[in-house]
Amino acid sequence: MTLAIGHRDHTRQAAVIDALREVTPPFSPEQTVEQFASLLRTYECSTVVGDKFAGDWPVEAFRKFGVRYEQSAAPKSDLYRDLLASLNSQRVDLLDHPKIISQLCMLERRTSRGGRDSIDHPPGGHDDVANVIAGVAAALTADPGAAYLEFCRRFNGSTDADPDGVEAWQRLRTYAYVTSGGRTILW
Image 1 (cartoon, helix red, strand yellow):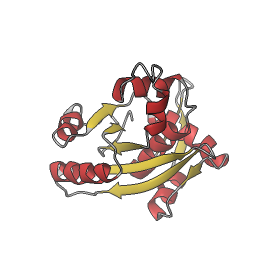
Image 2 (cartoon, rainbow, N blue to C red):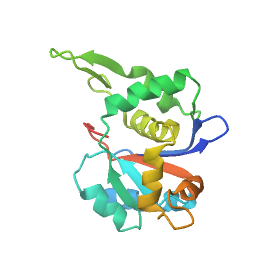
Image 3 (cartoon, rainbow, N blue to C red):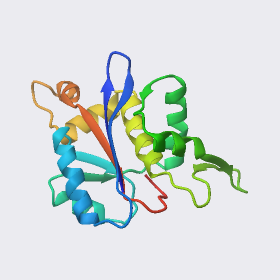
């Protein structure tokens, strides 16, 4: 189970990865969620976006500790593709962590018989760390347009003084992504 937290450097329009946690089996999923929730509170994060692995379990588990868990609809192949562009344009500051580099370098692009591209780890490999880094980077390097304003309206509330949620968006400090492990099909 992995967690990454980052913030947006507005002057450079770049994602900065602040924290990375990985817990490998054997572990208690409930205790791990509690530890992750504690770390999220130190970064003032009350919402995470994660994969759909394990169905509704992560949603319920994080809710017990006061954290809203949203399941992302973005396939991890899209996250990896977008991460490559962000890395090449120096819009992501990674932590100096050997697993980040190792997992990112091991990703493979494959084309199915139908012509559809996918990006994933090699057989027997892992990509949980790469996955959470790609998720944070995708959220933080995206154009802060309508999607961010909608996020602010939904989660921070718009007011008469701030009808479009612009001030709420400016207060938004961090995003966190979590992956629940296993072979992740969707982020």
